[in-house]
Length: 107
Image 1 (cartoon, helix red, strand yellow):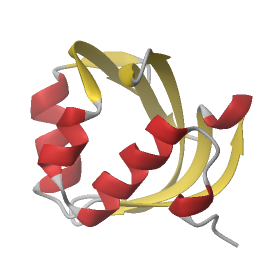
Image 2 (cartoon, rainbow, N blue to C red):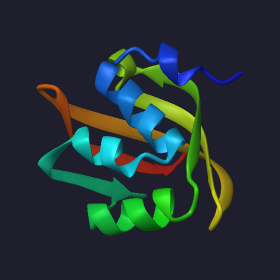
Image 3 (cartoon, rainbow, N blue to C red):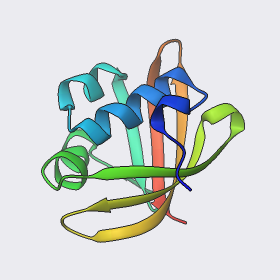
Image 4 (cartoon, one colour):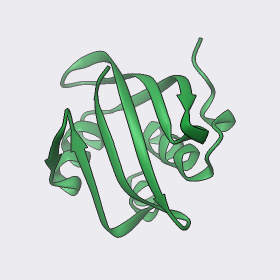
């Protein structure tokens, strides 16, 4: 059974999932440090291009199945219009009150 985004432990990760699921790119990018980085399946990607292509232009949505590491690692069912649904793992590095890196990939 999915965990409601409102119940996620880490406040920055909670806001990340909420912004992603709401399709709110302004709120999403406001959560990231100016030099934030990310990787997908172990390869670093251009963050802005990847987020647009895989999340906002493709109606991405995340249903969190479990969290660990104080809420900074998520196991989630992720789906978008491009790839359909898949089980994914997301890990986050939080610097102060912003996310400085996230890594995702199939779980």
